[in-house]
Length: 352
Ligand code: PMP
Image (cartoon, rainbow, N blue to C red; front, side, top):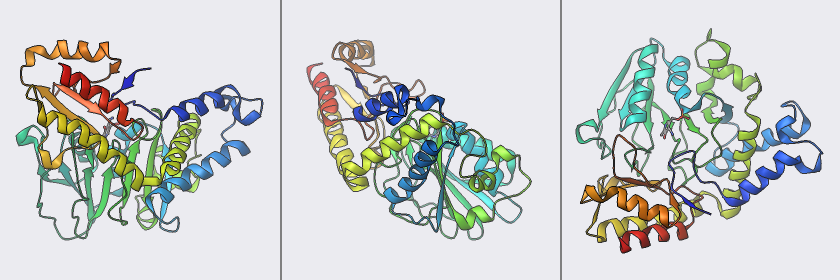
């Protein structure tokens, strides 16, 4: 087996892979593969029922206030779906630009109405999170990316949003820690990091906001239609939803989000301590904004990069190469990564 540090699609717990494999062969002794079952079967209904309840349970949100949807089209579809559903003459979009994914969300939202970028860390190649942002009065939403997968920065706290509804792209750190606020407007996350395989996007939407979304949209991009049909307006991504459910059950069994946060803090401490201690390497993100999910770093002598990658490959370490826009290395240490994986990486860094 390899230690998989890929940024996504990414590592999932081994038990999840095993149960998912069994479901492909013969789902709960039904004599059918989950892949050939109707999305309107009692079996899938049961899966969906649990899969819409568990995100709220893990986050400590009430089903009276929130609804979960499983949609297609990746987090990238949410970049414009949020804007299409929310923006109006009396409801504006505000954005915090902290990296590639935020700036893509901004570009897409602009197509659907009046938006403002309140702050950006582009001036320093997105290596930090802007602080003390002035939040305008009035009605609208504030969109931000809680964890910047490519640059390795993360909001340590939910940003202040004044009277605005918070819309968060939580694709790369969902369920890695508890929420420090319970009033989000929308949380969305592509499944393929902390949740499941690529192919579904979890959207958690506050019901009062859902009630106010725009009408007259194309059905597939209308939150209200997906909500009214409990994500079965069309054939939902059955298998990714099932695997996401298995992962959420695993998180719950580990002790929930407090336990995940502790596990993630420990792993991150091991890798960042080495980055700071080892004179051959340096971190890319500023220390106070470092991500607990994606640790970015580089060699002081960049000529040695391919040699280090080879040393990693020789030790069964995979997916460590940094994103092409940043260079260097990126160790993605999502929930499912065991501390032994991080220790194996640190050992290679020490020997190098
Ligand atoms: N947001 C973040 C934070 C991401 O890391 C990614 C990609 N992994 C996306 C959005 C885009 O997701 P998708 O490929 O599912 O559209």
